[in-house]
Image (cartoon, rainbow, N blue to C red; front, side):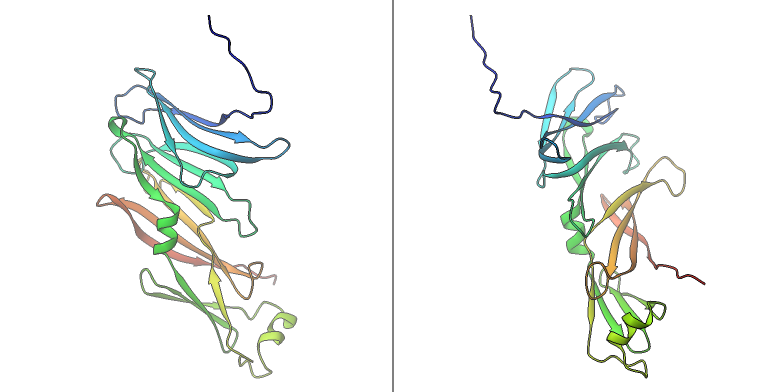
Length: 241
């Protein structure tokens, strides 16, 4: 006979997000969990882990995540590759002031986990140069596809502009901004074919993070066994008439 003891001072993992669908391709729904250790009186979660239960055999597969701490972890199931089998999208809020998020997409076809999307890889590939120009303009260069965008900041208000420009609209000194890492990754079925594309948001900032100038919006689609850039837009804030 065995005696089992429960340690009251140890916080055990619990289910923090759940989805159900066929992720291994056998046409039997599987259970997909994110588990983690919740912090008492806080939404902060540690040791976030992807766990998949085969709907046919009941067997569990545990997949540790490279970045496994954050807030409001969520799991979603949808087909990104077009094979008719659900893939697994994981989203974790870092909780920082830049609204930066961790995102992973896994395939589990044939009960073999394959990482399809890693936010770190994306952030390293999608880089930008942000430069203030004369006459109340900001230039944004997307290095991934060699595209240039010009943002008109003449509506930012006199206090803001007078710190940066002289009375002739010329820069008082060189100023550069930056583009934040990935702050949102949203599945969108743009062409209604039940295969989802990804809409990625990255905030464009000026002299500091709260000095928001707009967003870079990248649409990614699955092609040649990877997510590739399909469309790119820059969205800006409007001003009162």
